[in-house]
Image (cartoon, rainbow, N blue to C red; front, side, top):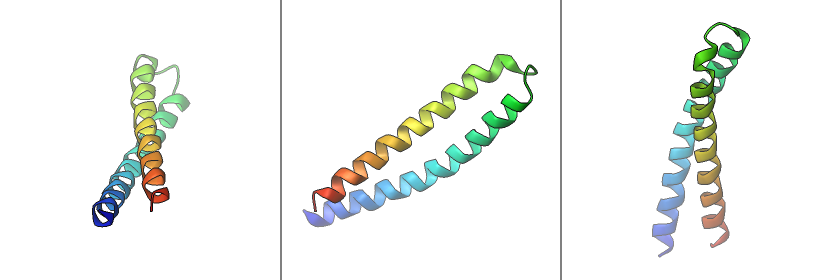
Length: 72
């Protein structure tokens, strides 16, 4: 059973690395959009919502890893 948990933790950490990369790019995109306001203001809510969602997913995955690591 420990092997299954270890694999799960490693898989989650891999997902976190991928999402961190995407999240960083989305954060920069949101920052660039904000700096250019009021130009393209109509896309602000969509970009902000996408950025929020990826950071929410990251938080959820990190909590799962923490929980699995505490079970060891």
